[in-house]
View 1 (tube, rainbow over the protein chains, first blue to last red):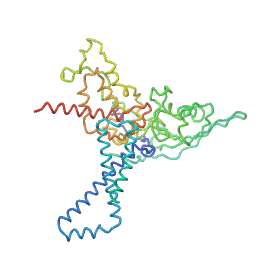
View 2 (cartoon, each protein chain N blue to C red; view 1 turned 90 degrees about the vertical axis):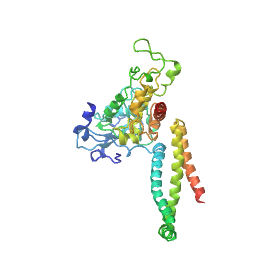
View 3 (tube, rainbow over the protein chains, first blue to last red; view 1 turned 180 degrees about the vertical axis):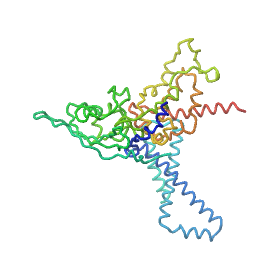
View 4 (cartoon, rainbow over the protein chains, first blue to last red; view 1 turned 30 degrees about the vertical axis):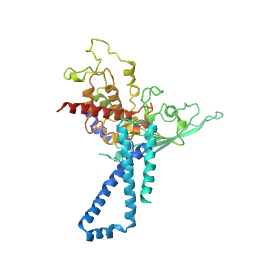
Length: 131
Length: 283
């Protein structure tokens, strides 16, 4: 009965209350959306990585053309640094999710602390990797 | 599918500015607090608006609900909101205050710096002003059958220990078994958590949301309930339970300090052990 009433034109005409527009940004949503975004970035990066591997497999000429296309672009270096950070963050936060799946660390304090630890640690590890 | 922007009929326009009637001469005035409050008068094709109120808080109680009542009494009688108990046990005055969902009656104005922004619970159809339509959430609650069930005769495997035939005897519960319900029975069903959850915003038609899942958990761990297996089966589809991505907005916002995210994780564990149990039976 309720479902029927919900689908009427009357319900359609009602405004939807604001959500993303007004909800206060906080660590909960932040770490979650960053996990998603890094996952997407890695997926895109993997395409580049497999392209590099393919050119390697096909021989010197192809690999050389790959280097010419991307190797000397400063923007490509930035993209690579971002890629490794995404990989590290996604992996560390994945561990956080695994721990959560065991039912542990789901209190607000450990969840928040682990989130910040992952964020800081991922930046530190990425720096160590590139320096 | 996630619709990140508000539909055309929901975009908020600038509203009116209201002032507390001038204080009579000689009477002292208190601290002024500014409010921005979401208004929609129930007329289709009219856009919601954000009205501004300046309230003299002298003689007004400390909570946001006190201010809302003062505004309704002294400034603008057309302002509409739900309220009842004024002490955080009924869940009627759940709304979005200063960016997070909470109960207006237990939220001190002193907690908010500057203008106090008040909106209805997020991503709901609005009935009027701060009153959201929660019928969808209520029917989801009904769908998990939130009542004590005896073990059905068909699947006698699901009978939990100590459950007697219905009507034969009182269903007793040890203090330890009773303690398993702590943290879930206290929920007042204000739906602050469900309407704070981005996953619920995008999939409220299929995902049950933290409030309802906390109740589902409450019945799953009740030692007197005999329908555990059926309850678990009913929850395990791609949406009802597993659209929880452990964002934890629910636990962060719960005005009663409960932890729906933890309860959902525990349901996932129960579902897994139920699955393992079943697959181990097969050769």
